[in-house]
Length: 112
Image (cartoon, rainbow, N blue to C red; front, side):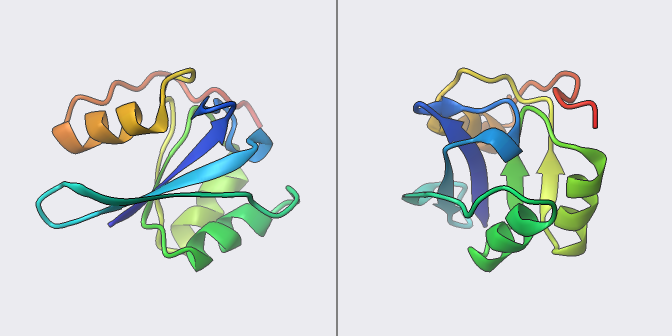
């Protein structure tokens, strides 16, 4: 499994389309992180980020907020989307909480 996290200034960004970088975690079948990679995405335009993240072989994205159309595009690319993840935490903290089944989510932080 490969998990994508939108990051700004080292913490989870509440809106994936406005992040500075994406942190990609590779997770083995024992739910252990085996690799972490920080990548700078292409400029944000409708449809670009879902396609780019799919090219990175991600299968899951954890985000604070994401528009409905972007969620549809991720789904079309075979990527599961979880929104409502609290911003301000490190990407490692969010991934570890997801893997441990303790990730708490709230409302989608994006309304478009």
